[in-house]
Image (cartoon, rainbow, N blue to C red; front, side):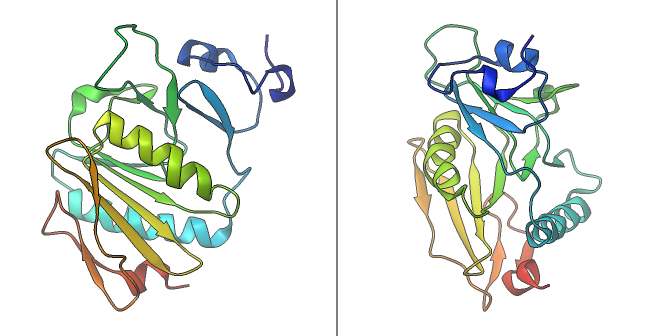
Length: 196
């Protein structure tokens, strides 16, 4: 039984089946089979920003088919260009995700790509969010991906094009009102997202 992260070789490749057996307290994500440690507990500002997103999206999606979930919430991803094995090597916990296909939901979370993912950067995890998660969200077909950068109070928006590649929009700052590509009726002031 694995009860400590120290018992694992961080250079090894692990699957979702391995992930389910781990009995330690540390929060980790599995990206393409590699373990990435998560922050022990997000800072207060991170939680505040997450609450704004979750509250606004919950109100907007009320009585609609789509649902909003906040971390910790396991999202198991299998690339569209799969190697034909049924093993899952990526399990992430996006800060916020919106799922419109209820068939993707089960008691353990979501299997398959959410329609929209929002990640809030924290000190130390920028490389994971910006590079590794960008790649897995793109590969798995997440239609819309927002990255909130609290330090500069900026939102970066990526939209999946018909070729399955992300197109980045101009950065949104506190002077902007931001809308969703998949929900054009959803509007949110960037200043309100970062308001303390």
